[in-house]
Image (cartoon, rainbow, N blue to C red; front, side):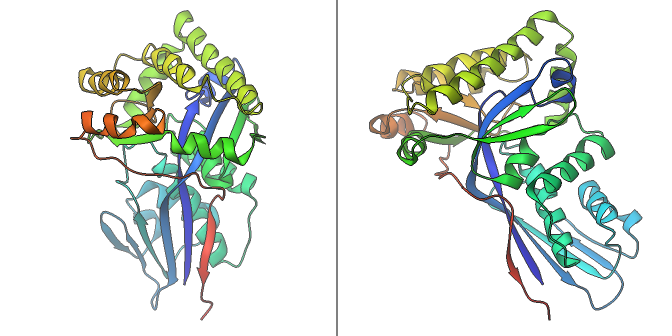
Length: 327
């Protein structure tokens, strides 16, 4: 039996520039962090030659080609594990539409678990690239590369996306106390709205054909570089305002990224002391991140009391094997 733990993530700046339709024309960059919420994958040898996969549904099949879960099927086909296995997945948050990258964390975690099942190790870079190959190339999903890489590497990372498709992963070289101040200033509110990421992203990709929307995404990339520069000076005074500006730019990319309910959440947060914020992920629902001085948190939570708050800390490690029992 093997158990793998893979973190989810929150993105601060540059989201959307990790999509091939953008970075093939203009280099992209994102600044994001893994968080202490996880997807757990357990794999175990089955006593017969069947395949059992348990997630929100349970599948029992005798051939990989019959698996309905597209990511699980693709992971098994890529790694060559094709029979006699049981796969169980558990997540700390709802599995889809939250904006925390759970789908890619699943892919990264399952790949790592299947390689461990075969007795093989895999580097963070290869793990992330293979997860991208599955989701972007094989499954043709309209997504970027940020989620797979942050799930694989973990930590507080600045990532650049070159026109060739190569991803360059850098540390944000700031004091640990700076990281803690940012952690302490974040509130995550669950809107209760789930949505299809693919539909939103396909519309956003079409928007890149418009000069203004493409230009706004380039501006988000510039802001990602500027935020990294400021954080490496241990200056967080501009983070709130930069998050606010980036959220306004992000909303301009697609009129379905936000709605009246989400706008109301943000307006209430701002009225009660928030310096900035953004909806995580592609938009339309999921978790809303609010950035505010800790002394303002109770006031903000009271103003938004109908929305559950999820406490988080940053996670320094990426996907890792927690347990192996070779017997």
